[in-house]
Length: 196
Image 1 (cartoon, rainbow, N blue to C red):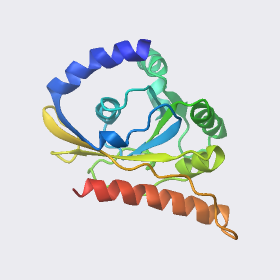
Image 2: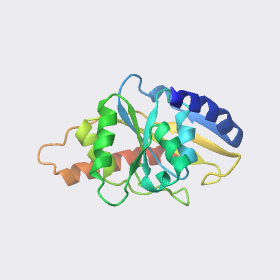
Image 3: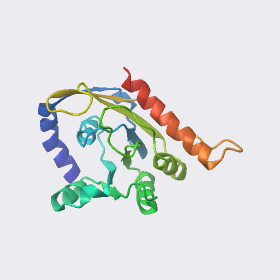
Image 4: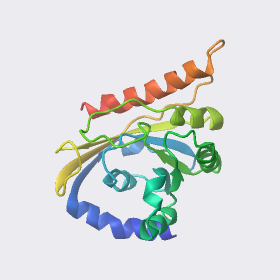
C-alpha cells in the first residue's frame, strides 16, 4: 500500500523534473516474478523505471544508502534492501532469490555501480547467480538521459526490451561460463536499446 501511495506522490514530480518517454511497455510481464535489469547513472533511474511497471519493484541498493535514518526508512518502505558491494554478500543474494520466488519483481543494476559518464559497463556476477538459483526470466531496461547523466529538466528515454527467458546451462557448460553467458546477454540487450 505504501509503495502505491509513494508512486502516485513521486510520479508528478518525476514528470516535472524529468521529461520521461517510455517505449516497450507491452513487454512488461504481468502476474509473475522476474528480474528487472537496467543500466544505472542516477538514483532517478529507479523512479523513471517505476512509471511503466505497475507492481512493486524491490531494488538491491548499496548499503551506504541505508546509513542515514530517513533514507533507510524510505528505501525499506519502498521494498529496497541493502547489498554489500564487492564482498560476496550471500545474504543479499538469498534475499533477492526470496523476492523473485515469491512472485515479486526484483530490480537490479547489473553493473553494480553508477556510471558517471552514461557509458555502459560490464555486468557483475550477481544477476546471473540470482537467475540461475531462481530460474527467473530477465527483463532488460535501458535508461538514457539526453544530457548523458541525470540533470534537472533533462529528457529521459526508458526502453523496455523483450523478456529474456531463463535457459538451463548446456551440457558441459561450467558455472563460470553460464554466468558470463547470462551477464553478456543482458548487457547486450540493454546496449542495443541504448543505441536507439
